[in-house]
Length: 151
Image 1 (tube, rainbow, N blue to C red):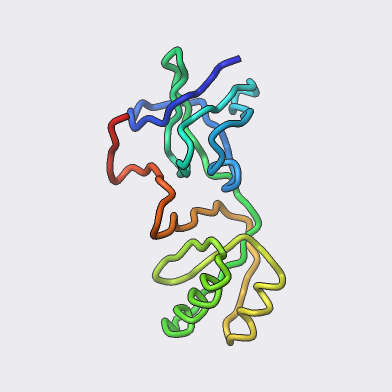
Image 2: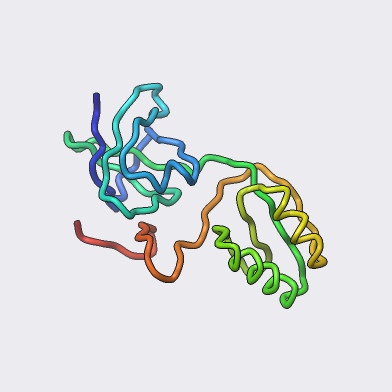
């Protein structure tokens, strides 16, 4: 079985991908299924959150590209920035992982949280989309294409 044991920023164009949801992208060791249908083992350094477009390298030098799988998310869109900030505050106060943009915020779908957000005066839509939450202020290494690390 192939073993992918490191995250790389090689930039190598790959046709083989691995589609992972957020819970899979925060786990360091697990069985994965490549887009070719082949089973493999992912065994990377603990504490890394994989992001869409990151690449995993195998011991043999093979590279696969990580694709963020679509998931059921709740999305709050509003032109009222104060309301959007309040929504982020109340969700963050409950330690809910959030994907935050200037125009909207999303979280993994939860009907109880949706009711709270509606109670704050915002509208919530349920969508099926990739989820890329913030890492948090105190940790959670991630890899992205805007910077590089040497490993």
